[in-house]
Image 1 (cartoon, chains in turn blue, green):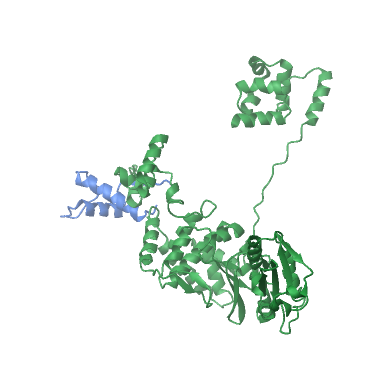
Image 2 (tube, rainbow over the protein chains, first blue to last red):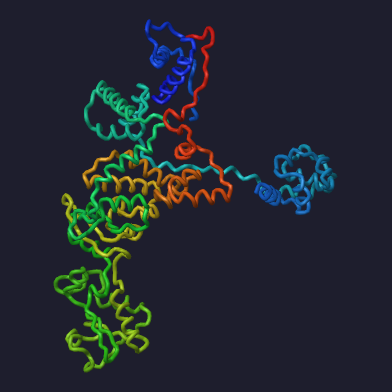
Length: 57
Length: 516
């Protein structure tokens, strides 16, 4: 499924919040990458975020 | 409602009324009733016979036990009486669209094979531009691909705030519009409201524009001939008695004299150069006579003593030929004045509401511009190209041609108004506004009396105008608000249902062993 830019932002945002609160990261991340948003973006690109959207249409 | 329909259905099946009265206490629809057995019905209070008869009428034949022979005969009669179940009415949607040409067909197939999702309109536009040119297969694919890319680039994401974008995109250039009202629409002498006042007029869906105007084209084969076009135009333009004749008042004898003026009649196309009536038409005096004779409170007099005539009338010739003499039914100054006003304004010919018709040449074709608008009547006039008749009155287009045409006309008028001021607003913003105004079948204004005033949410309405009154009535009538819109959610302090706020996340764990 191709996400719209709003969906992408919402998913990354939600995941970043989880990570910032201490959720285990689902990827091997490079040394020194500590920003939850960057990590979340990386996860999104790899497709490992266990979140999707419910579309009403 | 449902109960009523049910009873009606039973009546149609000729079920006796006393049976209906009993049955309706227990059953509310036909399906339940058909399912019931004779015993069930007897339990409700029906006689056995009546129950059997009822079920038979409802078409439940197999379960009805055979009654004695004598009775079957009568029942068969009854059954025969009941009309055959009518064949289901099939409504066919008339397809008035043109058939695709082979080239268009080819383009559609190409799109399908390339898996491009282009709307019909775009494909047809491409086809129209390319038709007749020799284009290689390869280039055709390229063109379609580029078109598709451009199209998808312009697509908006779901949940994008398109309405706000449209409002801003029209609103900002709107601030630059001049308040200067009048412009000339190609023809000198015809004033057309343009600029901000016109835009407001369109968006407010006024019934009558402040300067109604029509643009009429003459049939192709006639359009080069100025005389024909002139005569058509003169048939459209309203001509009153005063436009054709001088009116003299004789206060002493309480009479009115209508003296047709040759020059005026010639100008209005009723007389030719030599003062003879145009062929196929009655002379001006007869036309005036016919119209005036229908006016109330006025009598035409056929004999007048020559000595009593005012000098100007005396020169005009014979009565009934050179002039007409009128008298009010009541001899009083008041009714004379009234008669004078009536006669002055009496319409001799032309279309109601159109005060002037002017000609202008547009690439070797004569085009008629009118001041005033009456599309319905103009469409009845022969010689005009009805497919190209245009009026700037959106309401009139809606009444005569329908909402789709009205929608197009809103788009056309609004974008023309903005264009004329040198403002470029993307047509899609205007289309959104036009769609909103017309989406429920008639043209609605934007604003208090239109869209904003009819929103289903109380809070949204209260946010727009007269807050207290909306909240008060809502409180009194116990209105509900489902917080579906944007304004409501802002008031409540929630994320709005737009963009990121409109998305619902779901936890979707990756199952073990699921392929990537």
